[in-house]
Length: 299
Image (cartoon, rainbow, N blue to C red):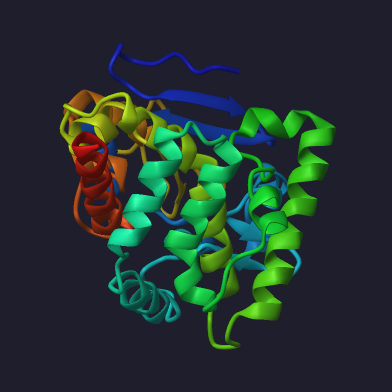
């Protein structure tokens, strides 16, 4: 059933007893309130086996979870998880190596010659992810990275779901075979998928808005649409709900792209509105897009 909300500003709650309980939040202030309440945390706060059935079903066909090895993407780990800080530190260290002028010029040239999305995505994967492998990532891997599911609605189509799971395992197998044993393979595999699935559209939007500030472009059109959280304390989320959530079962979906567009706050593009745990690639992405915009304008 759809629960009646108390005012037009309250979140949308979809609750089917004993099946699912999802709260969808797009208001920026509500997102901040929920995030700082202590009542929600990252999905992998709970062991995979205990997560809601639909979470396990959906995420095993996405770039965020490796069902075969039971691995979750770093931002899906609670800060209290002992692996979180070293994994993030490794990513920060690698991202700090930045990119070259040649990288910028190569992508600019592809945009000027109207290269296909597949070519753009493949070349951007090299810019972003080659640093982890020390060699070029093969085309078959960047092609596969387009297939993992990007929305819950896609999971209802069996062919998309099966293709997403198969592609995710192909990417994970490649990472396992080609990365150092002390590297968390899903963190890197996810980033390949993120670049492939989000980059081409972002690059073309940049090309079409050469006079618009970078932060304005990517708050109006954020590349990441939403961020999930799971309830760790039963509550009404500061009075936003008619009845309490259920610990370990209620999932909150923050619509961060809508919040970014409303507030023009770049921290909603790369997180949930604050600098705390903002995406590791935030500064890299903004700097690259600024340099690329300038390169295209000069041309």
